[in-house]
Image (cartoon, rainbow, N blue to C red; front, side, top):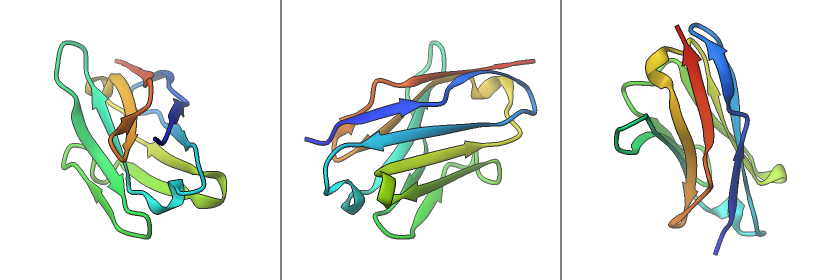
Length: 111
């Protein structure tokens, strides 16, 4: 079972940027597709972006053009670069792979 640890969240003003990291355990992590989700306060978890084990990436319309997902297999890490942040981007951000989820990292965007 892969284990995932997110980091990089914090408080940022609207228009600012953050980069989240998701570190996965195990030598097979590089063979797994990884996705980012978020859960806004009082709402359901929603899909943001995913990265295949190779080069395919996909984004939700709500973040397309503002967020970029990338991975560094040498570091077993998947990143989510978030630009032009809005207050509605506030929430707990999670990464997931092979049915496993990290503990989440809080992102708060102030207006």
